[in-house]
Image (cartoon, one colour):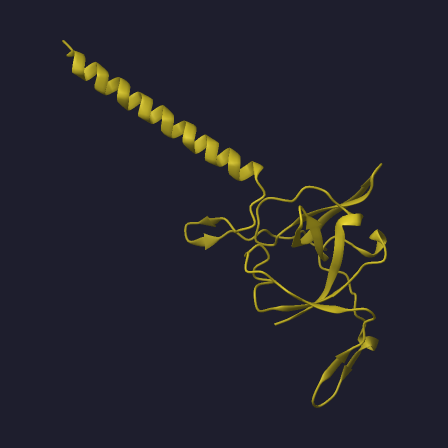
Length: 172
């Protein structure tokens, strides 16, 4: 069997294109795993929702004694509460999204925050709202690992000093 010089060049070009494609795919996969993406990952037209571990529900911040129900209103008695609105990032869907309102407070100590709570924290001049999935302490202080309910990737450690609010209620 004889090969022409042009056939060898075509084969070499095909191999180079194939290897370049693999390199691009590996670079994209590495970037996705390294960079903390705020948008949900779509696979086959369905969003991948992360699942919380059993027992990871938010803390009971509002007792029944603090809720008053009347025929024309509901009053929730919480000291120093404020209302929050959310950006349309998709990271906390279906729990939170644009158009939802949250009731939030400033936590007094790290002891108040538990796994399952939704916190607002500051990162590089941005406010991020994600759920606490792990809590710990090191020489710097109390830290929390968070993740958006609709994200596959967890955030880096968040220290208590960076936490602005805890969401204690959501109004749809």
